Length: 358
Image 1: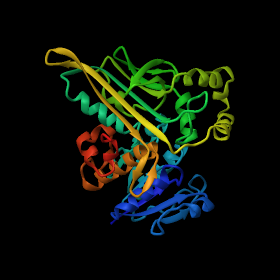
Image 2: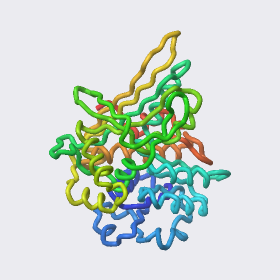
Image 3: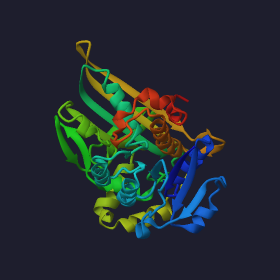
């Protein structure tokens, strides 16, 4: 039984701990700074709970003897956890979407004897695995387009949105610059730009640039494609209202106020849906062809409890990556890209199966 430490007992971290414990293959310790929150979680008593404020005290000796540490902490703590993993000589995995944090993890991975695998969630994460798998079937690739939406099934406000995951992460991806490849060259494009409309399974969506969803794909496909981009999917009208808040009211400069507005006014929901839409076009058999990977994943029962779609896809992806690491199916040291994970292996995993056709 491998010892695992999960950092952050928020919406996803607690579910990751629950998933891993349910396998009986991992001994799980869940770390958070909030003692009352930790003790109030409805988790199996065998999951050890440890109160540490890593922003103030670091992790100290908490990682001694562990196989891996999984960070589900806020993105601004990513580097702190990664440094502790490097010092302890344990494998490191995270869910961050923050580009700067991932660069810091990559630097720590140089010469490491353990694996550093950032961005193991939905996007970045699974979408990179799917896109890379499709791209390998072409003789040459022209465009790679990744579109992902984490949405309420029953939108009931003007934004067409409910909180389903990290509010800080949501705000960050709406504001920070976005990596892309444009006309064959790597570029930074503005968040909220690149507006388009699309339909999946008869439902109309809009999509626009958001930060962090490409992971390391820009580096992997630099000089190989004409166009590569990631856009978040929302119900029509969301982007324009967000631009009023972020630009016209300048709340992009006062993120704490935007955070308070969201948490006060937008309810959470357990009735959500995740839409994945990855399209690759390129040359195959002497002509330009296109191939698409599409999934619509709903909240449902999994491992004995109701799980939201965002929990299934995010926690499931992180746990699947850990499983593959433990099995030796992916590199065991240094910086590991999501593209280094085979789609067939991922979908065949007990957690990766949540991305299968329902």
